[in-house]
Image 1 (tube, helix red, strand yellow):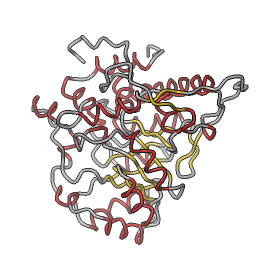
Image 2: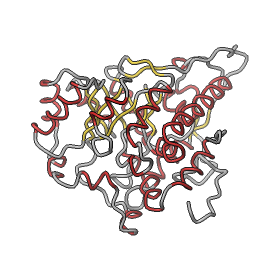
Image 3: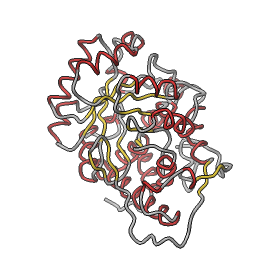
Length: 359
């Protein structure tokens, strides 16, 4: 493997290795892609307020998720169709998480599946489900996840209807993950808080609710004893004209008040992006597109390299902010600012040649 020295190079290699259809699936979003653009705009509208002369020789960026120690406050988000980006798919992702030392999520609409991934590594993993049946359907997956040692169970709740992803529609491209989950959409549309209560009453495994975008729904999560509140707009791939995840985060943090762990995703591409989320109260940042770039560039090794570069970026930025631990970060380190670059899916990587039609 050629040593990637920047995440730019990983994105470029991923583009080279992927067909146009898979690339557009990975980088695209719903309808006008406004929510995706706002994810980047929100992150790029925050500047730093650094402190100096504070002895930053030793910097610790380790974290934990549901009690499991992580080398970074970064998890590998649940993603469908991973096997269209690299043959190893979800097994490659789990192995990368184990090698580097972070937690990975496994989506129910990617391959290999739950048992194969559990057999590949005993490292902490979380199973994420798209609901395609009644309570017995959910119970089947929950029992399997518990039996195979998954650390937590995650229900994605912002997909009551499958969005119109026009990049895919224009090219008549159907992602593998969607092909695996075409039947039973009405059960996802019928999902409600009674299901959450039933799950908490029935199963002895931590529950994460993914797709929270308001303080009101965060409060209901807490009322139901949910252990993980996952702030997400599905990377802009579901509701068009939604708010940026980073803009939603502060109201959710206030509402949760430390009663559950807070995970966030939505356009996070650089170490500085992760620092901003931690400063605003997130416990863990999950990476999706960035994970896909690493996987497409060089399989498990590519994801490990993404995480190594994020770690380098975070430690450098932490030192220049004048802080040595994540606990020291707060909103006092942040300041509103106008974006320098025009926000888009890849505006975190300004040295890519965006005039090239392949992007």
